[in-house]
Every structure is written in C-alpha cells, then in structure tokens.
Image (cartoon, rainbow, N blue to C red; front, top):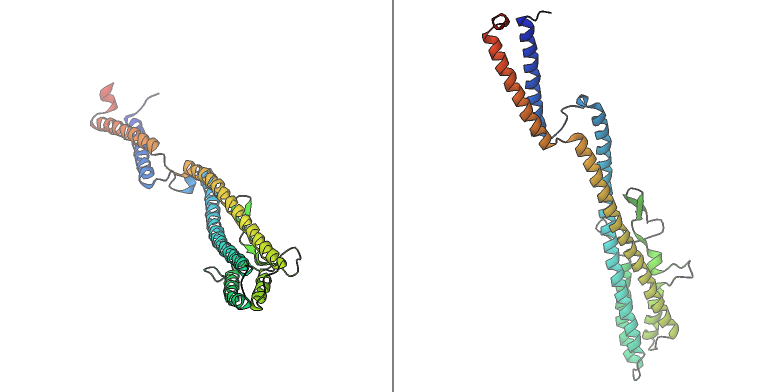
Length: 279
C-alpha cells in the first residue's frame, strides 16, 4: 500500500491539533482548578458531583442548626445558673431569718430582700433571646432540628420543667415557694420546715434542668464532630470527582508540550521535503 505525502501530512496535522488541544486542556485544568470544563466531558462525574454538592449544602444547613442550638443552650444554661444562684440566696436568707435573737421587725426588713430575689427569679424565668423568643419555652414551644445525619436535638427546654407545672404534682412551683417565704417574713415569722423543703426541691428542680442542658450540649459536641468527619469525606469525594490533581495536570502538560514540539518539528521537516525525496 502506497503512502502519499498528502496522507502523511494530513496525519501529522491531526496529531499536531490533538497535541495542541491536550496542551490547552491541561492549562485550563491548572488555571481553573476544575477537572472538567463542561458536564459533557464526563457526564457520570458531573452527575455524581451534583449529588455531592447537594450533600455539602445539607451539611451547611447542619452547621446553621448546630450554631442555633449552641447559642440557645448556652443562653439557657446561663439563665439556669442565675436562677439557681437566686434560690441559693433565698435559702441563705431563710437560714439567717431563723437565727436566734431576731425580732419581727428584722424579719420584716428581710422580706424586702426576699421580694427582690423573687422579682429577679421572675425576670430570669421570662428572659428572651436575641430574637425575642423566650429562653424557657412554653408547652409546644420546644422543637427539634437536625444537627447531623440521623441526629436531631431539642432547641430549648420547657419552662414548666424549671419553674414548675401546676398540673404536675411532682414539680414545685418555684415562684409560689418563694412567695410563701416572702409572706412569712412579711408577717415577722420564721420560714417553716415545709418552706425550707420547697426551696430545696426548687433548687433540685433547676439543677435537673441544668444537667439536661449539659447533656444536650455534650450531644451537640459529638454531633458536630460526627458531622465534620462526614463532611470531610464528602468534600474529598467532590474533590476527587471535580478538582484538578495539580501534580497530574502538570505532568500531563509537560508531556503534551513535548509531544506538540515533536509534532511541530516533524511537520516542519515535512514542509521542507517530500516523501519521494526520502525514498
């Protein structure tokens, strides 16, 4: 079979064009950092890449929810600590008012401090977050948000579990317990043992809420770690599918450049001679 000069020339031109395309493609990958210029370059990778991007958006939503729960729980924990401190101050005041040698007038003066403590507890119980929502939620006000794959956490804590629920005999109405002490002091009386018990129960009630908040914060930390680990795996998957491998792209560019230069040299020689001169 005869090979004409034109066939050899055409073959050289095709090789030259392919090597030029390879050089341009390698340069594009390096400059853009993207493995594929368009979806049609690798439809399967592009389709998987879309799925991975959706997963990344889901993890971004998880981070927003995590921050919301963290902020709310931190604020709630601070409020519970303040409530506990006010109850401890009330308990200390009760102990002082039970001391020997105190007269009715002195206890009446102590009642003013008891009133101040009760007012402070009322304010803490009704405190709101930056958005104007109560930190201690009313019935039905505690929802759940997803903070990691398959993990949901409550967004708040019920006010009734902290301040007491009149419909639940197992709880103590904190404000009523403090008011009983206030009334006794205003009347110049020592707080009764029942009133001491009620304040003690109120403190344990608040302490239980603090423990629950602490447990949920620990669960949130674990969820953050799990979510971050899984998000890293998703990002690695996305990078493998979509991002340029700098080392590979640089090597491809060097190889394509070498092949292009060789093809250019061959074409230059073909341009200055003919196939018949080489026979």
